[in-house]
Amino acid sequence: MIRKPFIAGNWKMYKTGAEAREFIERFRPLVKSWDRAQVALAVSALSLPEAVKAAEGSQLLIGAQNTHWATEGAFTGEISGAMIKAAGGQVVIIGHSERRLLFGETDGWVAKKLAAALDFGLLPIVCVGETLQDRDMGRTFNVLANQLTGGLAGLSDQALRDIVLAYEPVWAIGTGVTATVEQAQEAQAFIRGRLSRQFNPEAAGAVRLVYGGSVKPDNAQALLSQPDIDGALVGGASLSPDSFAEIVNLVG
Ligand code: PEP
Image (cartoon, rainbow, N blue to C red; front, side):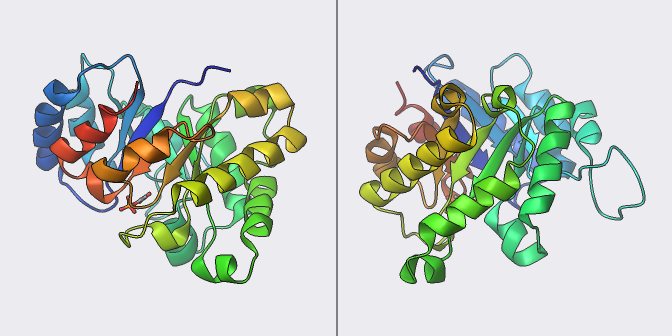
């Protein structure tokens, strides 16, 4: 099964529109080949229009870091998939651990957001991952299984092929501690095995599973060469055009 590598940057609450434009202008010429991987940047919702404009004429996908499930309504502070799409966004992160832990997002919300994102024609990047406490207590696989059951509830076999799943151990995000290659591959193989029971095995074989958690140019190669790691979700190292391009250029 050939799965096209997927490398996405998650800018979190960094970069204004002007900074996003400057980044993208510097980043575009640094990418050696746009055909080897699909490359995306999840920017602040406010920077979306400017980032989309700066990416025009390239294969760089621009998107958001969160979405509500409704098209519109009385949901103060939220943005909808319709709004992301209207601003030119093509991808959206759903269920990032910061959303889960700091803003109370549940697997039930993830499932609703996922369905809405697909309805609006966005490419969803659904995040799962265990905390350090979960890992220390031997609960990693239980937590992942529950997140997959709850977060992907109602998803069809066909739709599974259209999403990207990011395994992001919470203890490795923004900490500088990367999961070892063995830990990452073990968890990602577990996820694919689990998906092949929850969905049709062909769809589980086709879905792209990416790793996230302190991915940097010097550790990306080893992670990306694992059989069940089809790419990366990159936080800190996606804030510099040079380091993000270095990671993208490792693919292929
Ligand atoms: C993330 O925000 O999804 C992430 C993986 O961050 P970092 O690369 O900084 O650990």
